[in-house]
Amino acid sequence: MADHFKAIIRKFLTHAQYIDRNWDSPIRSQKLAELEQELDSLKEENRKDLGDLLRLRRHIKLGMSHQQYLSILIPLERIYAKTVMDHDFQLIEGDSKRQIDTAHNPIVVIADSLRSAFNVGSIFRSSECFAVQKIYLSGYTAAGDDPSVIKTSMGTARIVAWERHPNTKELIASLKSKSFRVYALEKTTASTSLYQHNFSGPTALVLGNERHGISPEIISCCDDCLSIPLMGGKNSLNVASAFSIAIAEIRRQQEI
Image (cartoon, rainbow, N blue to C red; front, top):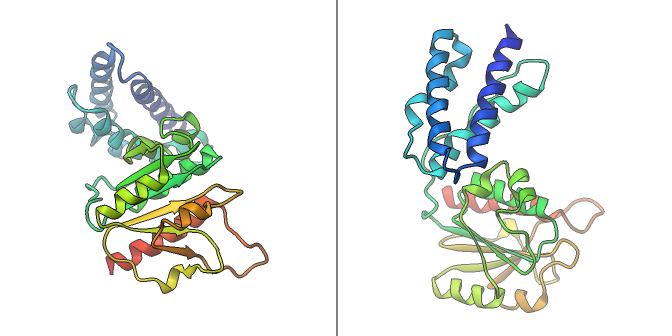
């Protein structure tokens, strides 16, 4: 019975992911219609463990946007992907389908010349979790549509708004003119502890190169420089890990 369940899920995910990869293809409507028929046929299975799939039927529409489609597909991938690959059945809690208000206490991120696409993908994933409004990619940071970014982001690079910007200094000046406070996440002799800073209002967080950090020129454009107190021998964290800690603390303060 478990093998039959996995076969059903594998078939559905393969079909659904094919539609995602070929969204702009002329056959999209045909494949969506086939997906609808596939879900209709599953009703006859009368199985409680297919409830998540069957409830999706009313959300799939031929005229839906790609973003609407991804809001259905990505949670399903997170629920079922492990089940399809593992020998033991394990159902994890699905993602929330609530609308995310990124305009409330807006936060934007500036990723300046990050060399690892995988770090960029991880930053996208944390950004989606904590309702970041937009990610600006400057220097040679990998784009949001880079395959490695999309894979590491668990698809969130297709959800979080992003924009490539050619000049970080001009971007910071523009954000300041829109009442954003701009912070460099960097450990320097003048840095303020992340936990000793009070965050309120529109916030921009600058992240720098994994090896060289944020350039002094860019730091001088920021309102303040923030660091995360460390307790071990290493002097720094991975940039994606540091960002996750910082964004969680900022949101914790803002939501109190």
